[in-house]
Length: 227
Image 1: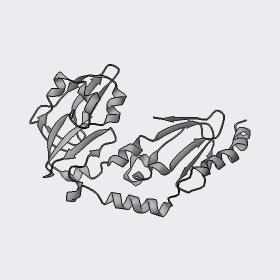
Image 2 (image 1 turned 90 degrees about the vertical axis):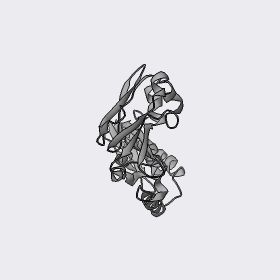
Image 3 (image 1 turned 180 degrees about the vertical axis):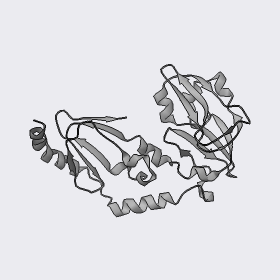
Image 4 (image 1 turned 30 degrees about the vertical axis):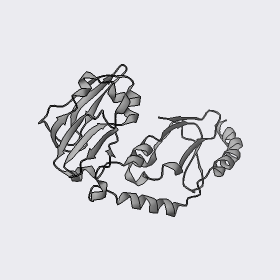
């Protein structure tokens, strides 16, 4: 039955998908990514630019590249809901990359906050203890969590930029027949139930390609969810 449904819908779906196909060619997309990949923490142009973890923490270095301000993304705050409690680290605490430095609790869930790089905590935003709800209002500005003196800036090289973290949210779960293509590649039919794909597995290879990845269900039972 699924094969019959897919065979009826596939031609129409292909036509609709082709009509929205991007005009940018794969070569141009690759060049765009290579240019972005060169903007790392190795040069002065990277200073005061936020970098992001896959868990939606962010870090922004000061002009000297020594002190990093850490917080959570607006997206993470929105997913948590109304924040009612923020646990902050103690000044002087030494942490390794990935260690938990604190936590954020909302009316419906809680989330640990991990440090994106190794170092020593030099300041915590004590205002959040009195007004945890500020996280929902300004999580990427005034509602930062802590500041850390970085011991190894090289650990920040693998983090995502703004485009990368936006792309990481393009997660789709599809049940039933579907088409998947990147850029100007021809659509491919899949009959895998519960097919899930993360755009290039959150990797830097996917930066700049977010607008060119399309997953389209082609069966009546097909369901596409953005997470």
